[in-house]
Image (cartoon, rainbow, N blue to C red; front, side, top):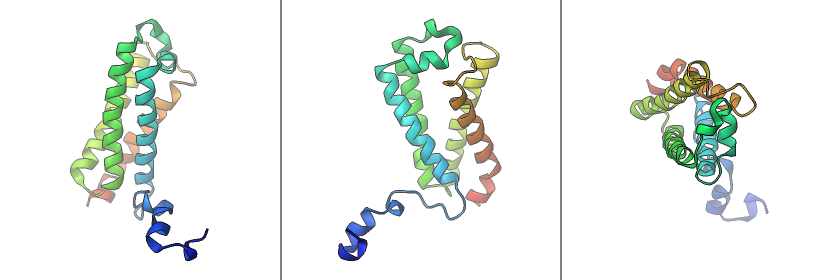
Length: 149
């Protein structure tokens, strides 16, 4: 079925541009949406299983309880909602600042757990949160004026 043979409104609904944020000024909105979707998965997962989080916090895996998983899930869902909102409202300074805050908080958390509290050990599970946190923080900080002027 091609868009030429369907009503224009249905064709619009079926195209990626109908659901993806506008990214004419750069790719940061896509990054925000990607990390929002990934965070949503992680938040939901933390409500039901904690083995992935135990792997992230392998240095003190016994401290990763189901309660800690649910708290972490709620915190991650809030960050995901903010990032998703920012991906579609990238030019709003207040929302942009909140998105920076989500990356700053995640970066601070995972970096201190790695370097100070020693609960995070470098492994395949912990590299993702560290890379996402630092990449998101640096990218949003360096592009703030570009997107919010």
